[in-house]
Image (cartoon, rainbow, N blue to C red; front, side, top):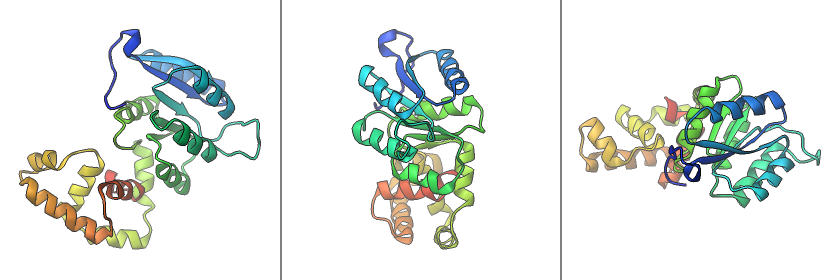
Length: 227
């Protein structure tokens, strides 16, 4: 999916499957999306196995799932579910709605290429905002709380590398991580596209990165996207 869907026509609605082992959470999330135009709840799941079954039976445009749910197989953890979803259904964005604020788990989710991460300590309006952004399919979306956790947890070596960036280089990395093109950044900053490109390459050299994908992932993992 490469664009937002907002039409109210049934054929154009964003079809969502919601998975959470707490009935109150499932119903609250479902009610929130049902109240918004352009969304349709096609299934509710109470476990990972339920979610996989729902995906087999229903066409879906977006998955909103908890990370720690009751599985029929006790040895299977939430990250295994996420990795399987990304492997089996790579075209469907997965937004994780979770109680965890563990920075190691958040980074694992980013590396697993989920579309969005929101904590359950935040209002449901934050979940809908992240889901709307995640539907673009281009960049990972994280909630404000998750962004703050990432920014605060950067290890000393990474802080040193970030500080090596000039103010303008840091700004370019931030804006690229938020989905802006070099042309858009140039227009916003009043500089030429060539200058922006040169500063971007300088930032990548300092951070020891070789591609846009690495740059975006680094920014998300180390809190640069929210700085």
